Image (cartoon, rainbow, N blue to C red; front, side):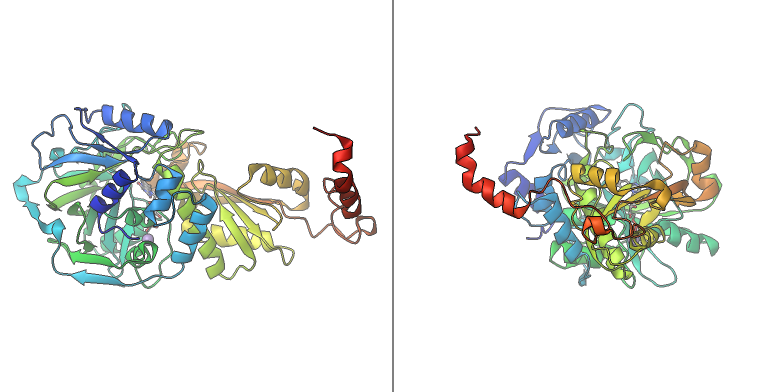
Length: 495
Ligand SMILES: Cc1cc2nc3c(=O)[nH]c(=O)nc-3n(C[C@H](O)[C@H](O)[C@H](O)COP(=O)(O)O)c2cc1C
Ligand SMILES: [Mn+2]
């Protein structure tokens, strides 16, 4: 089941009883953000705000949020039954993201129903919330997908990157050179060119799921993976002022370009970030200078309150755990690490801690896993801590993982590895601010850790352990004894 556009996704949620329309007037200034946050904290529904202060008569009057904010809605977003577990959702995403599909380019679409250029461009006409009191401003780029093109290969990229309204035609952005649009920016800027960008708001939810996950996509763009995840080809249309492609039935597309000239920079930040803390503090940052806006009639804006802490998840807590685990799993298989049985990151840590379950085949197998992750493009935000366990440990079960760490790890036997001086999240508050100045260093700085919680093959097999490296499990009853007590169980009269 694929959704044609945002509207079909919204009507499906409504039919399933998973959407509330907020019809009373709400303020874009903090009220929407607070309501969205409270609804998430209460495990509430997707929200469509239909009456927003100061936006009674603007061309965009409604805002949609929280639609990926539950496990069942993430399942529905990819056409699975509501009751599907995180483990199964992840496995399905992994399968679909292992094989890119095709896209179709068309020459028209609803996104072209209205075209705004020149002096008519005014971002303040969009109902963009100031999500929280301490946010630096109105964050317009939250649940969007930013399209850029590699000037060397011609391949497109779609990434989700935050951005704040700085002026009626400027959006300040947090542009890390280690991210894919950063790779592209470097190439344009080295040629003395501005980078063309197009920002897509509101479409089939799978676009956002893919653009915000660190998909590795040699030879194609994220769109081919979106076609595969939604199981229907993406229909794309060319932009008005650049040659980028966007979904033909998107709600809104903002076109523009980013200059490397510091005199064009605008103040951006802070923003309530995925870590659950504010991050990316106020500083001059590159800006998207808007050249054109195209939108559907009665356009619906899509945004989200970000930030996950224990028992207070945002939408990203639900779906990013699945997408990042799936992408990491495909990465390990693609690079040739054998025996990977499962990958999972807990919902609250957004891939910062990655757990990998392997069928261990040789000494050093867990280190190979960690090295593959740490050397890859997914490690901008993923894999600060990598935990590897044997096949008998269910990584979706905290108790099992902690038990393995407790009794299979002896740190001075090479099972805890420090990998210092790597790049890492510019938004991680445990790193000194100066060390994650992206204008200076491009990204943050992490000492990564591997916790190899597999049975250590440097432990020699022992005769007294029955020829194994570890003693037998004491919590299992000997089969003969078990048979006997089961036969007599009623006699014991144990209630
Ligand atoms: C709401 C949201 C905002 C994000 N903002 C940023 C950002 O400002 N900068 C950044 O580097 N990554 C940001 N990310 C993470 C990227 O989307 C993610 O790393 C993705 O892999 C980027 O695409 P790419 O791999 O094609 O570069 C954000 C993710 C979400 C869900
Ligand atoms: Mn990419």
